[in-house]
Image 1 (cartoon, rainbow, N blue to C red):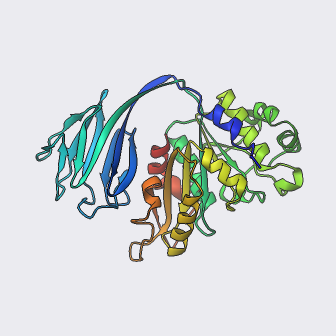
Image 2 (cartoon, rainbow, N blue to C red):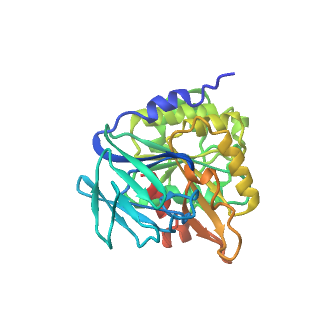
Length: 351
């Protein structure tokens, strides 16, 4: 049965934006497989280190931090980062720290991996970005990391709204002086999501960012379904009151949740470094065949002394790790995330 959840959301969330932005596409197709890097950021590092922006784990000849692309004005430049097997632009080896402009049609070779460069200029009209978050298992800190992303976006000056779609709404625990959903908003969400979008600016909770107040009852008991919340998100995107909306999906990878992920413009998966998480990420990746957005992984509870099963996996090309959040003995809080700029890298990746 065809799901309705993502359909209206796709058309609204991907409306044109009002700025010109140059995007470089690095295409590889050869004996090592096929993959693409989309270079949109001011700086973009490529290498086999899982903390790079573009992770190449299919060739042992690639250095951990192999090369860097950076933007000056309207041009992108490439420079080698002291790699063992060198960086080449159109068969010419880059020497030392020289920076050379990269253009449409150029060939960039990193050791034995050669990319063809395509240049795209996106002419868009400013609109709301929707960032979905999810996880592949409990205990990863999905809710706190999702709140952290919303907080980091707001710290960057973005008008940000956080929406939790779990039926059991317990995220108020992490907030200071949390406000809870009033009857009128609950009724509108279940009966008229479009009208609820008009009310959110008045009824939103405030925590440096706005949030849809948590319900003190199970959402399902109020007939507030994931489909209704997605209709609410669609209405918000059309109103364009927010720069970013962070939508935390339920932890279960059901049909509705998969449909939302496949339709996402930005998808952040929260996982730990365990073999269990790696196996579940691999299974999830196999079910995201229709996902064509920007995907990232936040590795929570990271311990450098333990094996990291997120490295050198098939899914890490589509979903590179954008941030490692270290395991600490003290309890992680939203205030700690703010004070230590945790989730800043993730916020930069999805802006």
